[in-house]
Length: 317
Image 1 (tube, rainbow, N blue to C red):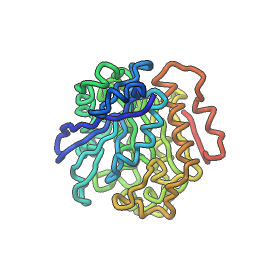
Image 2: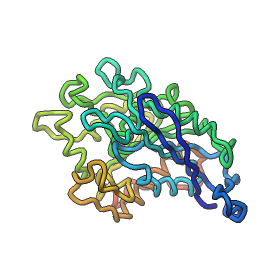
Image 3: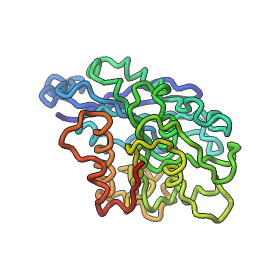
């Protein structure tokens, strides 16, 4: 099995354009037949594949998540990454995960789907022809994201909003909500949490630290990721996790890191070559996904991994 991809566009309301990449397990033995087109047949041996959708951070290019998509496909999943170009508020226009900002008002939070790209993307994937037609399991869908994409994933943990949703994850995302949207200072908004959630974070997140002015003016401790796990995720079925990477920062999930875009300059040290932290992230995520997207086998479980030296803190609920 090798990893290949197909590229396509899709329409998201209130955006200029959206493009996606679907990574899938391919049949290495069919490379010769694809020599003129580059379209490699799928490896059907493990189909149908669970579908993982990766929601991007603000102005983070989808290529930054290709390494993770490849790891997931090698484990038997199908992975979609995407970028929509739309409003970023005061920051102008750029890459966005697709956000219905009106859904984040104090009286609206957790009342409706706020992920404007998810349903159009799922529909577009379902309409794809060869080489993936009929090979994706739309009843086993996981959504996850980085930074703002992680926040959107958390806010949409309701299978009635995302068909087939079985679990969700986020890296560097939280639900402390900007005061500019009408929320009181340092308030954390609850999320539906109707499926298991994995909340990943880095111990040294410079972007979260530098963003505190959006959420508070006091001098109290600022740990929105921890508070999100403690206060926003009201699921107590022993299947949701907070895992902090000891050497992680806001961009540990990205490789390569595009230093020409986004806010990577807020990190004291990017550590784009920190393969140990990225490997831990992938292993924990794969263990979490295997528990909720696949039949249990001999693979590691999250509880088997949290004692690693590369993990500085963890919690379960």
